[in-house]
Image (cartoon, rainbow, N blue to C red; front, side):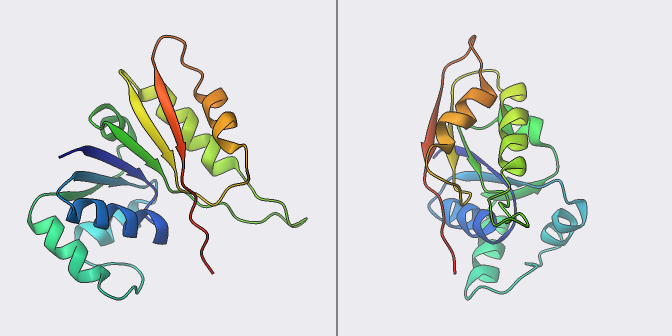
Length: 152
């Protein structure tokens, strides 16, 4: 069993977190949106995906899936951290990477030991290098994995 933090509880983050928990991992899904976390803690999934409600309920009841607004605790207590935050389009059609870089900066600030950081946000090629530069911890080792989700 691994301890995993999923930063972001939108479609990609919640589905990923619930599936990782269903494989027996201890997963905490974190979001800055307090109302979304309150909804999830009350047992409700805020959007429809076939089978997701049952997956979340089962893994929450078994103690493998939890929800929080406390990124610091989740980062410190996890071996693997998934970045699953939004990457909206700008008015010019570019990708707004500010949420990804903000999450990376926070993760870097809270890390106390080696972490594997997985970027699942929809990002352009080369983002892993930029995320590593944002974290830029010379006192700690970490690895970046890129596994972006491309949804239609």
